[in-house]
Length: 127
Image (cartoon, rainbow, N blue to C red; front, side):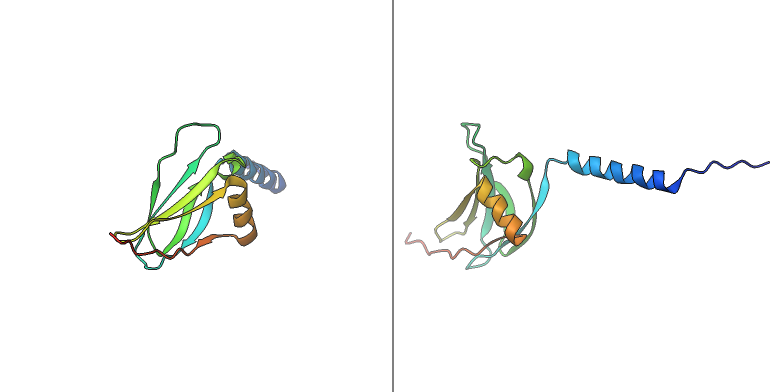
């Protein structure tokens, strides 16, 4: 004789949904879409997040070369309004270009546009 134990489908779906919500809620980092182009292309792209609550500057993190269209892990839910997000493009023979946002400005721009977009024009160095 064969006995089968069946788990009610609505209960299974509710458990699955609850576990997905819990896993998503525990995540402290989110992906931020970035589209950064430069003139001229081929510049090196770095970024950093300076935290308001620390006196030490954060290290620059290398993302790649421009044009850059990808995603980066940025701790959006851990960012305070006084934190500073900075992107820098660099190329030999040109002056570096830097763009900074406060944490609040950065997240607001991302929420409004769904992407962080920046197109710096590098200026030739006289040296």
